[in-house]
Image (cartoon, rainbow, N blue to C red; front, side, top):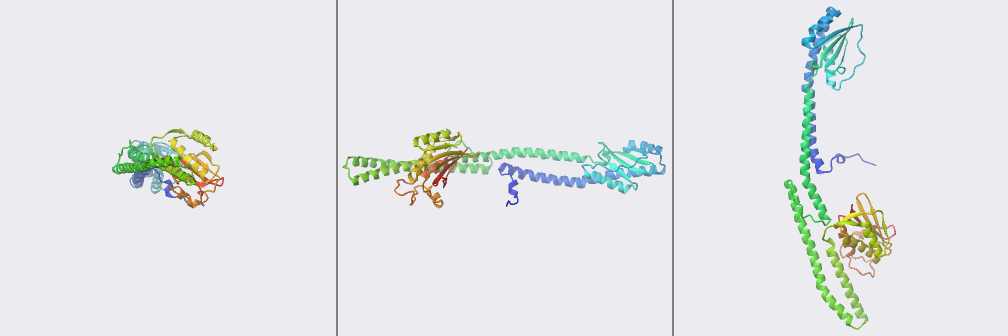
Length: 435
């Protein structure tokens, strides 16, 4: 059952939109309140005074006509009122008042005229404020027909209302434009900081990023650059440490291998050779993990061709939905996929590779037909040096770094590694990369 829409759904998500809303919304609300007060206080009062004056003139003219009802009297009144009072009078013998009237957009004007005429005239009347652009049509029923008055619109309508609206709208538009330009300029440093953080998360060089903008944004940018230096220093130290350990141990390992190769072939010597080979493999795995953060710039890579080539070399079936080109480090992507394929071969059987695309992501799926991994242990096996004491690791060599290296590489490219159940009954490892 769908709930009611919340206010958050209508609030802008970007800082630019929210800042603009914070500035523009109070201004619009304030101007609406000012306009309401203006029209209901000043403009309505002025219009009411003007309409009462016109209604009084119409009432006087009607009273003068009733004393001597004739066409000549109507003409005399017209000659008297037209020049100075902008009020035209005409008698329409035998006519009746119209039965309908069009409504004015400004209902306040109709209400003011209707109220003023009702207070000033006892006879039935009719008026129309929309028929003529510069005059108001007022008609009063008399015994001979209809006495029609044309009053200048300026006499019953305060034109300052339109002037006020014009300046109100113009000021709002100008303020909005200035706010848009200013806020857009303020949001640029934040967007650049977000782009730099995203690029650094993908292992790209962000040394050309320079913090600028407001003091808070500059401080956040400077903190980001310091954090980048600390992370880089940590990664370099990790790589140097493991590389040094590997280098120091390779020399005695080489001597041991040489000594064992010259010794007589016995069962205990064969086991020693096996141990030395396993130690050498472990050192290679440590170096792979140490270099997982990688260096170098990403380049355009045909991901479908890379996977097809890898599948052909490793004799693994590959399914590609469509040709895809992304910016990546091809050797690292190859290493991650190969680690997952070797992991499936080691602990399961029949690995397969598939490349799928979505509007936002690329999905590299490696499926196998092995025993799988329980859901509650999937996060644990992604940690470095993790091993499982179940059917997947019985009598199998390894140091528990294959999945950790693959996850490192996925994260370097702004993606992630996810483990799920495979439709084939085993494990599905998915490398999700942004498009």
